[in-house]
Image (cartoon, rainbow, N blue to C red):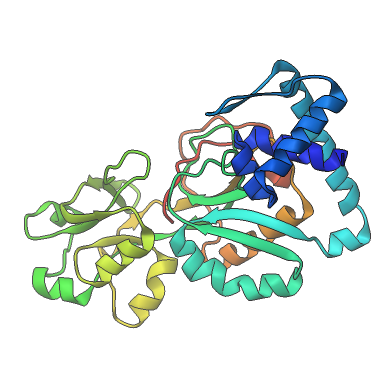
Length: 332
């Protein structure tokens, strides 16, 4: 038995809650993972996992052993990355999940530069707007916009999305230019609704003009979507007014395919976070990926000066200079 492989398999089964998922992320067959766990239990002479046909549960001994295994794996990774060759040439597989518009407009076009610097890192990128179970799905990190609502995640704010309101020329020809946000409540104006992945509802627009004039409007819609790229396509088709991050709108506005509306009004900027589970050790490959994301996103959505908000509970800073804060995942 290779004890390192066995410990790695055990940790992944605990995190995934499934032998099948663990085998997939380790790129092994389920039988091999099962055998590694059985050999580890025989070596330790304790039961680490309760296995049924439907789920896997960790025993009390298994939970205690898991905490030590995670620390040991982290220390081993740190030892390897302390070598000059590992520092300069991190390698291995990273599983990340990012919003589809961010992948399309920002990250994927910049990836050739990343792979030129780190040719031995393989990125498996999930491009989705779904709610991701980082531990169950064995995802190394996610990038999401909006405030964080899961206090168990370690997160780093990597950017700040500036938001604007836009409409296609075809929409404006049919319905006219809305001069005031309140116009969206009128019967002849429409928005394209963006559905929250958490609630399934379309949140209202909150805009501000100057320092003291603030308004919230719900707007009317005949179409609501939960995917950023489809949302943009609906706006380009003239189906309603959009609220978009400027990185998604700039090229279309430059070509005259979208027209800014509500000049003088502004949306609150949306923070962009990279988050990972607190028990997932931060490897060299994850560190360089995070640093690269900060640089790339910073060009499109730099972290700026934010207006004061109500203070949120935060945890002490951890690796990557990250604080744990509530996270509300969005499509951007």
